[in-house]
Image (cartoon, rainbow, N blue to C red; front, top):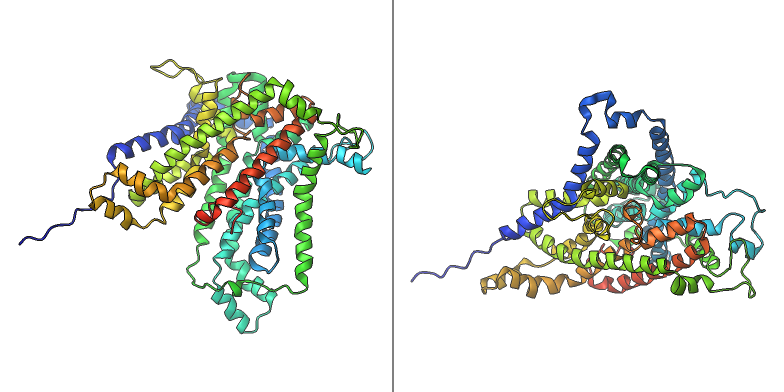
Length: 569
């Protein structure tokens, strides 16, 4: 009697779905970058007379280049110091309230850079309502100390210190505990263990965190714009913004060349980060959390006080200043019972059509992008799980490009791609919300995909194999088996996309037009036009929204793979 054969389990995704996903990723990630490169190098045969060569010959280019390196480099050093302090303290010591410390330390990274800059501007200088309330404000006419290269660097360091923290914490969590325990049994002192074992083994984590912090600082627009433009201190992103604002689309070839220059710098940093991350994967085994915990004894209270003091200086004081500024009638007025007013909030809600429009535009764009990217992330993650390693690596690298490169580079690429009406359908996207929406899809696809990919890779493949043996179609298996298991990660990815896109400025600063303002653009424009009180009121609501969303993600953390929520252990 012939034996009944078990149906062969297909490990390949359907060809039409994979082809459709490949086309989608190509349109969102590679084509804008290729269009930018073509525009920058289209007249390369002219050599010294080409647009790219002329851009390199301009003094303003190298001045902005050197300033970008200086502010990003100094900011990275500040981020390295802060991120290392918190990563080593939280991971390797017995301090208390670690979850609260990490949450507070991560909050500046989630707050939009323009809000960070605005809060610090309200904290320092002669016009600070908080300092005037406390009687500590400098004399009228004193310069604003943040309008400087060092002021920009300080805020860049605070904004991107959590990136160093995340990279270094990953290395510290995977330290071989048995090796540390062996050193202790051999009589090694704590400082010897730090110098001889911990620092060498976490070197690559430090390099990776430093590299990604530098790349992020290099592409940051909000902080250099709000602190540098008033002082005519231009870095590469703000130089592009200034020229686009002053001369319009006629300078697009020149802007493409500047964008390629920023992109090359960013790619160097990304390559260093990826190399360090790969080298930092330990082959040693060990799983003793006690061996990795240093008992500080009486020094614990001092370290805890120092960490909370840092949190107070980099987070609580600026936010308190921002809130104070939103409750006074004008800058420089101290907050008292007589001066307390909610007029800025009333104006924001009832009398500012532009405010309502910016809120609705941002909510529409961010919610739509989050929902669509949630669907795409499910399909892409499910296909990548069944694809070959070569295809998966290529697709993931392509998806990372728009998120890794500075936002201003993506914005210029989108302008070049959609400056003319689309062929065949004669639809013009430039000057509409559609161009911002497409840029959001390209930039935040990686954000939505990572938690879904982490969750789907933890699934037991036997569940889907059993359903296929029972005759379930690929779509039925996806809906009935895969989707319920990865639903928390899909939701977390959608929340992360919404959180990062609703206040986005770097991309939309170059893509918005009249009537299509976003929240990030609105805060920037209000501060630039001198209406800082209204900008502060809007920024307070933005911070509150960020806080609520982060708390919501924290509540969902127990249902998610480790690492999906950055501020959770």
